Image 1 (cartoon, helix red, strand yellow):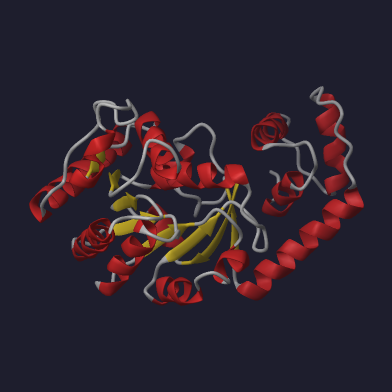
Image 2 (cartoon, helix red, strand yellow):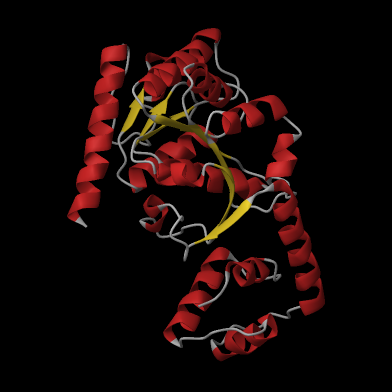
Length: 298
């Protein structure tokens, strides 16, 4: 079995992406390889026929040591696909994160009643208030609210949940320490209320372009259902909905995004309009039942 630390080291090798690393891990599992030294991994990569990969072992070890030390100081946990704490819902998607960096309540990642609230960074006043009120109501219904820690609808969702003393999962597109600089108050409030902040990236990593799309796939995968508050045809909201459709997750929207319907197929046939608390609770119950039924049938 390969250790979490060695998976992190693999991620630091130039030229190795998530899919290639997944193949390497499967190859090593099949061969029942137990690494005693990370330098041995170079041989297995060559045995697989992966060419043009030159591993700078000294740099990899230096960068990895810095990450491990940073995580230790900040009390950030490193969870891999081999750990029992790894979210079972992420195991169900093909392109799953290999490593998660987690601050806060690790057990919340396997909560069975997660509803995502997503939307634009620049909502109308009405959209911002709806996001907050819906999150507060879901928290009262014992749901965990999942969102992306961005300004706008995400921020409103996290704060609404916290106002009801609820627990929320923030999926972030950069490292924890990088994100912490932008909104320390909300970050700390999430942790104080028993919530979780999770990233695929090490603590000091900045957000690269694809990190936002990766973040949105995790939001969709962790959630039983997704509620769109406001969002256009492009950007993060549409990506989250596309992932939700790919994962067969229920999607609902408010009247604020009705303009999208008819212009795009991203909502497919997987849509509901929520314009009341009653419909919100019904959507929550339906979403959680669908996902629990799927889990029981596997």
